Length: 95
Length: 518
Figure 1 (cartoon, chains in turn orange, purple):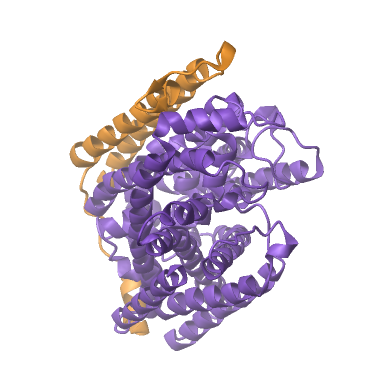
Figure 2: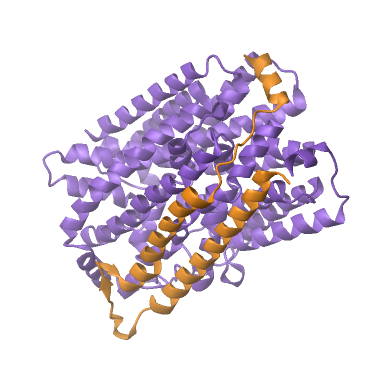
């Protein structure tokens, strides 16, 4: 089996799990805690509405941290291969 | 001072176009002009994958101004867009495009499935959807020129009075510069200017952020003042406005978690950058570089526009597109070098528009020259002939854009969303099938593209003809939200089913290429 195919399949699966978890948490949290309270009362964290801070900013930072780890430690630095014979032939003709 | 800043950006862009032209002189025309000889490094791939457009600095801020904090959830999926955009099938597409000698997305599908029909279908759909999106961007470029010229007399295209001679001069000048540098240096010119303009956007935002926060008395105070003016709905979901419109009900919130992620995965302009990357390490670095860039662009932009609602509370309907430039002028007026600041901030949306237009022009020209002319009409055309045709196509694109914008399109952000949705529904599944599914067939890929595109288009036409659903953005160009879900969800679903179903019903593919790729 082609190694890039094998590695990419595994990496894609991990990323799609991250997307699912991020989506479920973010949309779920925001709709649980971001609806208008009776009397329009609102709580803030560092100037942000609390539901934006915990529901969007915090997962955003977590996803960024995960992305750094994923890119540096998990994603393989595979050799992408050389240009095809067809491409080289075309290049010689075009120059 | 403001106009001088824009003219400076234009001059630097033209110079970069010339430099790209010089860099390509000794390389093969098609490889160099349309794919930059596969030499893109991580900064270029990360910051130029065309996630920003005129909508980022005009339509998106307008949404925040009108619907408040709910827009933070609307854009929240950008937290995963960098990792999904580059890590799902970036490496695989880069590898396949090298092995198959593919320069464009239709090229890749044609070679992978050994099917001219798959390539032609992809070409036609790209031409159709991308031209629509690109032409809409010219209006934004012309309006920014006009704003710079008149020094704050911003009006939107929705108002006939707003279309004066400044708009038309801006349109001609903008078109001449963008077509000029893109024509000179092709893909590399688009990428280099894109990189330069991305840095400008970041600088503009980071300068504006502390200034507006200080003037608004802090973010919490800004939110409270906005609530007092526009009602409490501006601080809560679903972002209800004074007319009772719910900007982001649950179904749409879920939909936008699909839309931006799959638009990033399926946009041909993004796919072609992945194909042009230098190495797998480039893609790895691009994941976190773009992640960092997005953190410094989107959340600050939301904060700026919330402060904008507090500082300039009563922009007339239809003029909220101008909130970022207006804020720059407003804040700059109190500072010694205010004109320079306003100019610098205005270069951000201007850079975003220019970069979108140039990268789309390259993809469209490649579609015509490589995927139609060279593949079907003149397979043995010389490099000289292809070069001339490429220049001609780019000039034609400029002429079409000018003519189309003499009566400019409205609803820029709605068109950006439409373009993202159609790209996602049309190209995500075919790219996925090409990368990961050995059993996928050419008929399955064609069915997947056509079914996805037709579903999105059909729901938009239904929305155009039907009554206002009172959800989502207020626009005549709104789609029909079946079960309160955006058409992208239905388009993706139908595309997946069509791709799987038709592939399973047709003869399994065979051949040497499959053994090489899997």
